[in-house]
Image (cartoon, rainbow, N blue to C red; front, side, top):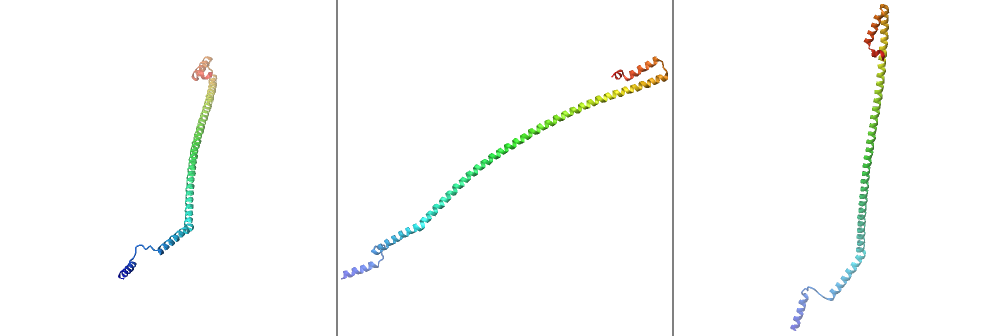
Length: 187
């Protein structure tokens, strides 16, 4: 009996010893139920949590992609508009330069017209002045002739009053004519 008692004591001591891994039927059943519960929980969580989160993430990803595409399209439109505006600015600069060029040409033509009109007016004034000078010259010549006539009549009066003979009278007339000048008398 001592062997039986020893065996029992050993069995009891063995039962008292903690095992590192106790593989009994209860542990296996608990483990299988735990795995089924975790798998069921995973399926339920997947259906109610993961799928909506995946859908939300996909929607967010699509929205971000659309926003990026829209931003790229907007940038392309902005670039095209910028090029159009720059082209229009260049055209406006060309038009402004053409307008200024036309204005310069018109101003130059107007200047030339004014200068030519002024030259024509100056030549007309010079011609008028020449005609007036010629008239004044004629007036002066007529005045000289009148004075000569007055002098001649005074001389004639002196001759008559002095009762000079004809030779003296002729010599006085010739002398007066020489003093006045023959060219003046003939013109």
